Amino acid sequence: MVDRDGAQTVTLHRLGPQPAYQERARMPLAWLLQTTPAEHLD
Image (cartoon, rainbow, N blue to C red; front, side, top):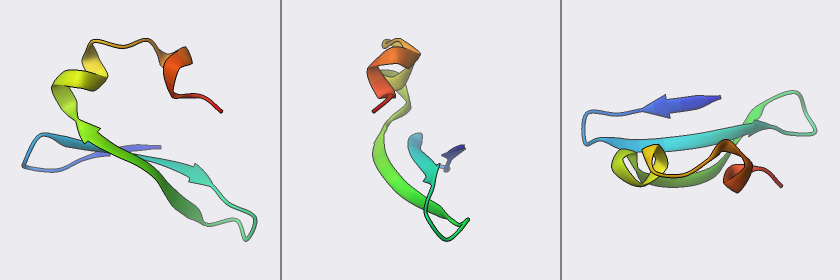
């Protein structure tokens, strides 16, 4: 799941062990758009 706020920051979430989302990373939207999806996977 990806969530974006008004400050152009993207927060990446992943499904945790309790079936609840946990924050994985927070980064500027501009940086995220210049990378590939593979760079964000564990």
